[in-house]
Length: 324
Image 1 (cartoon, rainbow, N blue to C red):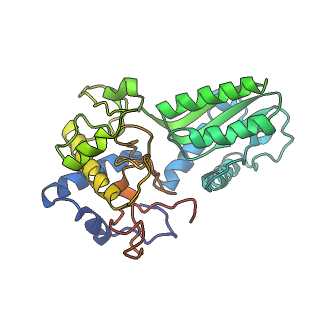
Image 2: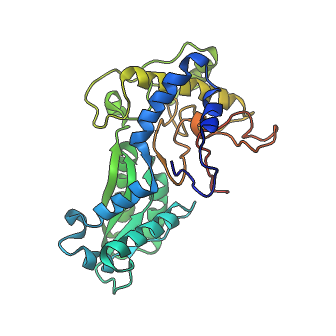
């Protein structure tokens, strides 16, 4: 695994053992087996990202019959307001483009009004929406096409983001068209929760702290997933394995929330979210683990002092925040 290579020590069996030992002895081995199965399908290494870029930049539906000419004339946007993901992804994309077609992005006379926004993963779509909404208002031309390229996209966030961008363009009286491209799309819309591909429990564990926590949620109460067949991507090895992860990561996330004196309402056990028990994403990239993943995966800092907010839990894939 090349997770945060050069930034964090390479993961070792001792590291994994220290993380899994925080769970009950009876669930440790089956949890590791299921998580290994899941991450083989939802972990995006740098090489996997490069392969996607090579594929998408030659996709005729995107780049037409002459990909070199298309990319030579495309505007590669650099407008991210928070974080460094776009800068790093742009660099990786530019290297792949130079290898594939021998040109650096944007070095030719970009006349065609085609713009490309790159990022790693679309979760809620709020960051992409914020960046492009500002660009639409302040910088975009009167007309053009915007291609949004991400490694993975969650369907609810993509739908919400596209609707927002269309409204912003209409409000600014601009004729802009938006197209989304992703190596994988993950189903997480509430209406399709029975076919969802995120952690979405079928039932809540019988836990007093969890019951009290859920009783506080009146605006967006939890709606369970029913067991159905026919998901698009076989992320989980089985329904049994999926429910094991959902239950154990949910309970450990509740424990992590209890370590904070005044946790944000959006800091939910299965990941940062405004509703339910959390976002539940299992996507991790070589760059980072999102806060939309279960807290038990990324919460904590092994070097934190005992009185630090991140003390009290050992992370499997320690998250890099905007601050660091």
